[in-house]
Image 1 (cartoon, rainbow, N blue to C red):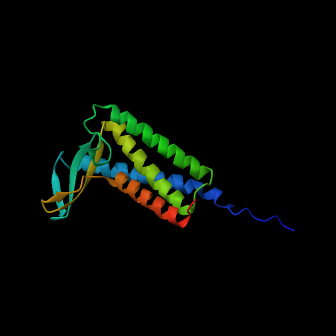
Image 2: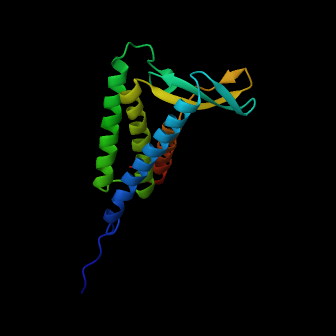
Image 3: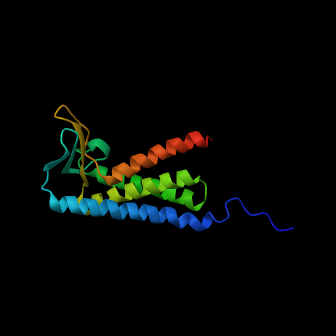
Length: 167
């Protein structure tokens, strides 16, 4: 009688896809930041959908929403270590096959986004942001970038996965 196939057989061979996705996110993130940093002056705003959506060039020395932006510099190292720690943990979980496919995708999004912003912190001392959502002149969401977007989508996918696979 033939041996039963392991339920994860074949999936192990695809683990590299999640790391390739994370690498592609990093490349896409860095290319967009490079372009905006070269094509825009700091603080310049160009409406894409007037009253709602702009491209701009802003620098964020803190974390999301400029959290700890004025903390004196230690935050750069804190957020870098945090990104490496979270990325290492998520990468290890992918390698150990502990996640569902949706969670693997979420982890790849978060790894790519987190490391994309780490590259900015190491190269520039701040994160380059260029997407601005607003409602005319009465409300502005803090500027963000593709790395931030992938982190948020990855976190949302993790929440969805937690409802699908409660532990």
